[in-house]
Image (cartoon, rainbow, N blue to C red; front, side, top):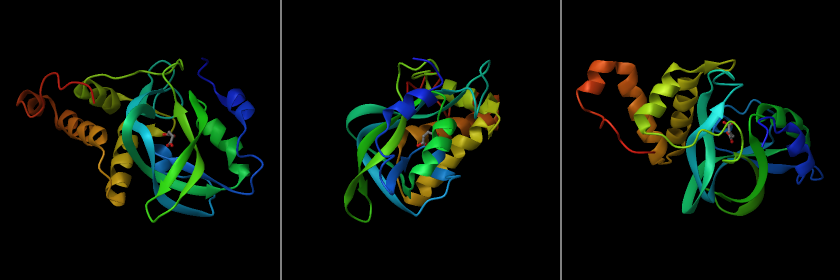
Length: 205
Ligand code: SIN
């Protein structure tokens, strides 16, 4: 599938006819809305796990040196915490542009932390998009994130922004916590890595 998903998303439709609808954010949309919204509520979605497995050619990297950002992967029983924004259809066009690097619109059920459920829209970069990177050892991913940057800024700020937003929500995410620990080791320098606070091949996270 082409990296640029704008045309595909316009055809997917779904929420255009509604006066307002819920958008679920789990990556940059979790910590930096950047669009007008009517209200926001912490929420979870089931069956999806947040993973830094998507390449970023346009925000936290470049086509020649993509960064590594969040997408969702299917995992039975998983619960992903994020932020739900109630938005009007006018935000769809700029959102499709912002999420054009491989992300497709999906409809899913949101469970609000303060009670209730509703249908909502979520942008997911599936593994068949050309920018998908997939899993790698945590230390490799952290090194990749530490050295990458793009028009939206350093890649490490994206990871730190997601981690800080999850902390504010009181949400646990083992994958993000593992990457944050690995990033701290990388940024502390090679001496710290050699000291063995991280296993040499910590497995995928
Ligand atoms: C999201 O945040 O919900 C989608 C991925 C991103 O923009 O980082």
